[in-house]
Image (cartoon, rainbow, N blue to C red):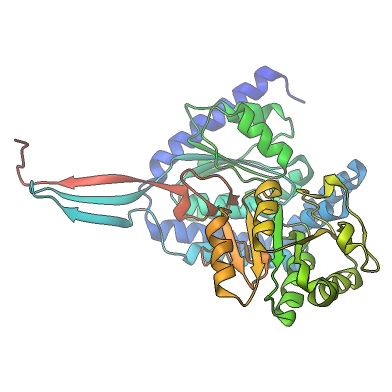
Length: 421
């Protein structure tokens, strides 16, 4: 454990190095960044055994801490998951470079020609929990967008993140880019997080990716601007006009495909007219799949459910649990989601276009879906290559934060000896 002065000095040094690297990276060619990411992917695959050994240390550490099964699943890396991580690196590598993209251009009567073009944000700080693959995703996306990044992974994934970070550095070396472009905080000490939140001279934006506790801490203490990634309290509303096959398939996938991700369904709302038909069938299918259904009084008549408490509404389980409630119609569903949702992702299952339009119009979640699994709430599935998180705020970036969302813009103004009258 380092003392406070050591942590401060460490973080100041990392910040200064990141700022210097950002200055060089801002004008690095697209080809160079692509080369670095492909080389990092090659390194990660070549060193996959090392990554798995490092991950085993983290799994042992986390078992001793008593992490839940869902959190252990988030943490675990095997060859298949590493292969997915490698594919993600290659996808980001081959994605169009956003830096320098002309977003708009126009001419003025004064004779000026004006362009708005994408430019890197500068230095990004990413603070995340559990999932070691975020090390690769965040490092790759920040690099693609021309940013330097300081990564601070969770204490549970310390060894895994270090092993993955070493592969990213291999990629930077191969492309002759500054090694300080992607830095990983080399300590579990939480004082490093507090330092990052106040490093306004070095860090341009903080991206927290984790539970409500982490995001709340960052929002309370940060002096650096924040892209908030709040918890995923995801609702699925089964409308009176729901198709039974779509309802069954979508809800089962939304809840059970992977319970530990932020796009997993956490609350099922059922129209009162289909409780005894579609609703009952879906809930029984969930129970048969091993899901614990915390039902309101109206739905408790379905065998196998358990009574819901006030704490079940607005709860992110990240496990094989779901809250379930009967509602009178789409307006009551909207009211419930407004009260208990987190503006992350919400879904309606209906064949009625007018009802779907009302749901979309009157809710303001970052992602709204119809007749599709909420597990698609992911930058990769949106065609962004990958994501650094789902931003639930309304400033700058919202929804999946990919490479393009990690840029700002500047105006390029050209004249021909043009003067203002």
